[in-house]
Image (tube, rainbow, N blue to C red):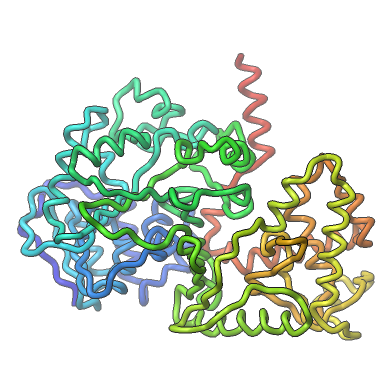
Length: 541
């Protein structure tokens, strides 16, 4: 079982009521499963400490086999269980004795876990490590001050514990993150724009900008570093970009921003297009994840998309390795069948003369070539006002491919008949591929090449994937072509569109487990709230 060491503990620490509640959830849990707790709680702190969505920060990273890992300030162990899955041994240093004991309780059956209760700087470790994880802790080492010395000294102490070639993996907030310009509260002062104004009042912690942290790393003799950019942030990342693979215009469609305050005054999603186009994304990224050390080999992954909020069979990591290849792997063993199914569906499309990205299934992962081309979504965004005819041409071709993707059948999904029995659904496909949409399709040499055709519905209207294709992109085309024009062109009347919208909402809810993760989804951007906040600010002026 997990080993607990308390000779460095501090006995004077106070324990909050919410920490005691989390401990009770851990004691009562089975196999680290907190779905029931998360579906009922409205406490964001509880959500962050118990949700497996937090694993997305590290689940894509390629740790070497048989590694020794040190995790500093682990909280209630939200990342610890994952680290134990990939490492030979995991050592945790947690200052709070109560939380340290809770980690041991949470993972009591793991034999490769050792938990120290005490301050990392005061613990004498008996070995050195291949990796040291510092997530959200460096910012607290300077008592909220900009003076670099305490941060440098802290990193030097950590660096001393690395084996030759070992790495620090550092997750921190960016003081100039875009969300703070949009009105999100600063995490350590709980005030608006405090970090942007360089903390005019006292603060519990200090967030760095990119050049500040680079200066600190270099002075701590961590001269080799690679920046990654977890989006929307390092706490609940959905996509990981890197300095070798910065985002394009697809960023908006890949992420769901979230906020801890109700006073957002601008849309982060809408601003990303301009941020990317002006090549300033690294400055405005909400968080940094930095791989650093001395004379190290960097992780070969340059980009990763993590769908950890789905079920066990449909949670995947899609990683890009430079311009060499793309790898899709399951987050859980149950997802291995999903990979086989995905490959078969891509092959079935190929048999119907639909171009798809080639796939090879090996070592429980799906490998694909790196395609250097715009997605169809990015191509559509690149069109100017004079290209209305080209937009129609593109959508006509997409509609043709959707009809070509499967046999037409007289049967129709029984739930649809019960759902809206008097609707005229149009042609029904024996197998409808829901992901035949612009964001899951490359456009090269005027040909569409589809990828990630993961979701299908049997005996379903062809107009449903067409609805999805239009719905996901039309906001960015509305200055060129209206939604009504597109709906009329493909005979999706208002009643049919409304029913598809309801079906889509239900599909999204089931796929993303919104009942379990309601805390996160309740914090999404709200355009009406943003508009109201701007009105209030105008009245105060």
